[in-house]
Length: 174
Image (cartoon, rainbow, N blue to C red; front, side):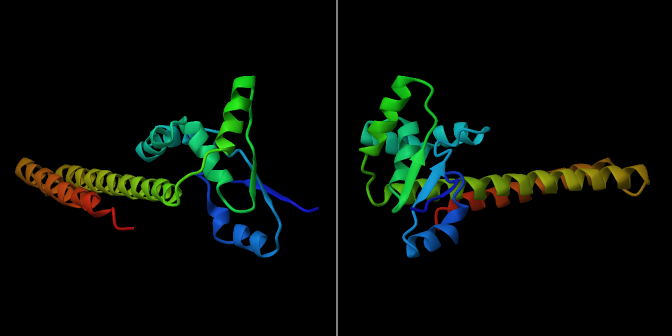
């Protein structure tokens, strides 16, 4: 009996592109470790996600059970979640009985992609604003730019950043 053990959870899904399809073709199960994203701040981000909260409410389960149910809903995937208390083991067993609607995993996945795209736009705005301010400081130190040019540049950066941020309204279409 062969099994492959790999990191797999809602926030770490890289194996879905190559490894998981290969394992399915070969009829080899995947043992997902850390299915609850136990390491780092990612778990808190996932648990506080509006999409995960909504799915949890729709199914009357906890957000942690949503994370586990997502992994267990995948064909040929088993999970080994960490459980330090008997209540955790019981909650994990209940997650195995959860049947996510066909589009629930897609909603969660899409919400995470949208959030990543929005964060990238925020960083673009931050880098752009800092770059223009540094340029104005350098030009001011060289005597090329005056206070009015700096004010004009600052207002221009604000307008461009707002227009760039408006793109987040259209990120729904991934």
